[in-house]
Picture 1 (tube, rainbow, N blue to C red):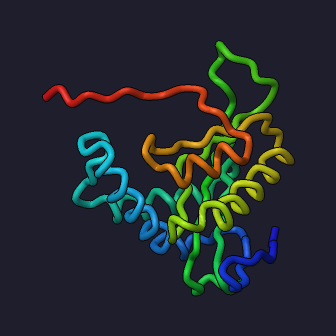
Picture 2 (tube, rainbow, N blue to C red):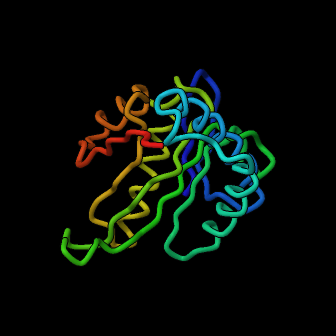
Length: 172
């Protein structure tokens, strides 16, 4: 799927992610991880080898049949700088629930500029959701830090609602 969109008068493309883009996707994740560590220092504390481990993890994910991964870039080629990315995993609900189909879980979802959640982020969310529906998903679940207000605002405006919250307290 490719979509042309406008953000700050620059065209960008939404397209499937490729394994060679894993390091660029991880670089965006590193920015988000640093921000989230300020929100909750113990829970989001970065491991010493986080980038290396996450790059390998993303490469594995990008080769799985139940994973949808899209990037937003200014140009339609893998070497173009990324404006954002989303990785969604299609999974069945736990056996005690029956939503009526697969769940599209979005854990890794970043934009390069916080101001781009309403544009790049929203287009990525809509595009991956559209793909998930064609693969049998009936709901989307997106992970978001509790103080990440730009992302939360976009998710609310896209019609998502909070279903659960995690409470964290360091004990050691």
